[in-house]
Image (cartoon, rainbow, N blue to C red; front, side, top):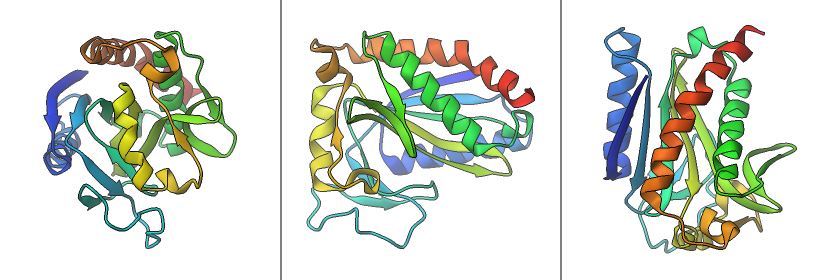
Length: 210
């Protein structure tokens, strides 16, 4: 598979890149791709008429997108991943795909000495009662887009105070730096995220066939 590391992009630019990659994969013109990046500060909200998770007078722009889920924040210090995968050959099971992404993020966090976990009935990855990573995916003819966001630097969680993250009232967001109690080098985290995804991706094929 391809790994793209475009640096820091606006949400609009990243969405255009995803759509291009989805189209190319559908036409058989490219391989599956994982895009790993940071965003310029932005709030996004998924396919819903309920905007109660957004407060008024937000400090950054709001972008309506075609993923699932309520409001979230993307910005510097947060690692966002967009796997462009052909789920036609991986089981056509979004629930299964989401669980795979969660397991990947749990293993990624463990590499920094953090014991993360799922919570029953909720999507994402948690440390205790604090939310470390969020997921929101979409598919087009079973080609995946959107994906996950995990907070790396402690500063990446500040802007969440202006929204109800993922529509979960009272949820506290956390980061790898906060949970590890030590500075985390973003570039090192980026490289580990890339390496681990390539290592774990074959599991999605195996699980889909089981």
